Length: 429
Image (tube, rainbow, N blue to C red; front, side):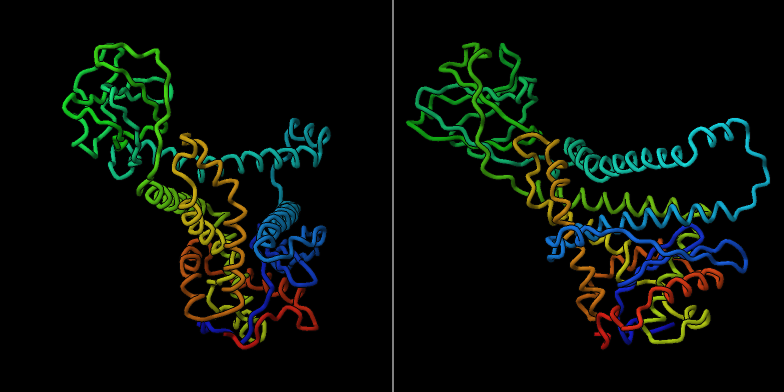
């Protein structure tokens, strides 16, 4: 097995396809697909990148957003090309049905493109639900069971000398089941154990206290998102129709931290669970094997060894500059970003995942810069940063067979520039 510290670091990267590999160099991008036992079809592809259109996206952090979008466009184009080549080379034993012939004559490639567009939209929508809204929803639902997940925000209400009675309701006047814990019992008697005429539990101020002016502080222990209160001079009055006044929040405590960690860990579990499940499919196993061939071939080139099947096979298959590593780093960065987003912005829990979606370019930009650092340097710090992604690659890369390595070798040979413009670092540090 080759040592992790290579002799040089290249900017060449790629992706695994259906029975093939796409390699992307500084001047050329080539797709190679095996269409037969002794046949490999090669074709160059290209796109107009976002930085080519707008120079602004060449700046650090912004280039990460453009890089992700361009990589997705290029990968999609490569995948469609490899699928076409694989289908063309497959032997069709069964005669197409009359319905299939009618669809082909009527719509042709338009039907396939339309279905792919719909599938892409549905895929993005599903990803947003799974990675943004579902973790937040599960956390909020768990708050009724796990005390640490409850909103421990403190709420303050200013008192006057004639104030004897306070009702607390949520934003829609729903019944509150003893939602508060008192933090200053020297100022008030406590929460009544019985509902009043309006059907609410209330905080009752004793005659003995009768404060000149002050405030009471209460802790929300039932995870209400928005709190209002009503006051009355006496506890006998019915005040359900009086004006609602919002309660001031001045501390969010540890809820935001718990929610960020919970959401981040659940996202990683969902991501890893998904790729573990799809890795059991025979077709995906072959894609992951081609993924391993891609990494091994790049390592062989970076170790300045001749690009032969034997030399490629002895390389490791875990590369720090990989899409899997990028995804894991983005998920981890998302935990940190979540620390700056309120647990329930403006009292509305639904807005937290919306804000996190809007902040996704930030996570993307930071993740891209970290991947570039890991790709340029090989030291203790970069190995720590890359470690989670390298571990995840044990799932997304598999040991390839010789025929797959041959495809990877042909693909990388096509994109290696003669002027060495792909070399990022020649010292391996």
